Image 1 (cartoon, rainbow, N blue to C red):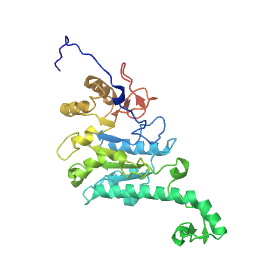
Image 2: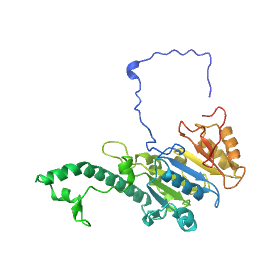
Image 3: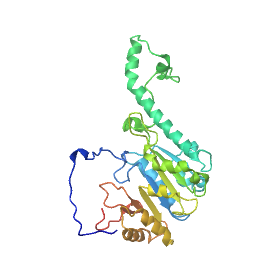
Amino acid sequence: MWRNSSMKITKKVEPRAKIKVVVGSNFSIETDPMLPKLHQLCCLFSRKGTFKTTAITNLMRMYREGNPSSVDRIIWVSPGTAQSNKELIDQLKIHPDDFLDPDMAGCVRHIQTILEGERDDFVAWKYYNKNFDKVMKDMKMGKPIGDDFLMSYFDVSSNSFRRPEAKYECYKKYDRGPVVSVVFDDVMGSKLMADRSLIKLAQSHRHQAPYDEGGALGVSLYFLVQSFKSVGGLNRSIRNNASSFMCGKSKDADELKEIASSCAGIIEPEVFYEVYHEATKDSPHDFLMVDLHKKDNHPSPFRKNFDTFLIVDGVK
């Protein structure tokens, strides 16, 4: 960029026009100290049969087993990977209804409907749970209570009134709605990838299923693909919104250059190439993880697999 180093610039500050920053976080879900922040948009790139499904199933397991636990529901979008990797995916105990075909009509809208339903269930539980003691007291005192409202507390199996059950333990333990993750596995070339609503979902994933009082349920998205930018692959807008990347060993120099370019706003390309080589040199099943929004307690944004931080002098 051209600069005239001899040009003199003076400043005059107008304090009334100062920008006020609202304190908050795009990553509002508390996770285990060793794990990346949530919600996130993660892109995993590698050729077929390497690390992708193994990595993502282990990451979901670690989120679920972490302290605090931070995955409550997993939606798996794939044309058939769930069967070919059955043993890996079975450990996640995904409900049969949460396996979706990327060629189904309205796939993205179906995911959004799930998120909105989870939000509504949590909001209703909070409301009825909060009012339970008062309703029981009013009922004993003979105060009028609407039948529909009262029946929200009636349990047919025990023929008695009781506090509403929480669908997820996180309602009571963490005072939050469920953390939902969506895994898009082997979806390149599908109808889903040509759906513009997928791009909108990726761009606004943290704001999905908003609450009336502010904030949103949100969702984390994981894209498992064999190529970074092939025809029918990940749209550039999705790649540019990623908060983390995982990439396995590749002989495609152009593809590596594109991945390095996507990280360039935070990480210099030459640094990327060095840590990439270090992470993938030993095995085709090893991968580099780049966390573009790492936690303060993490010594580096780079990891070989999940368990080994790669610390580079001068890179925080």
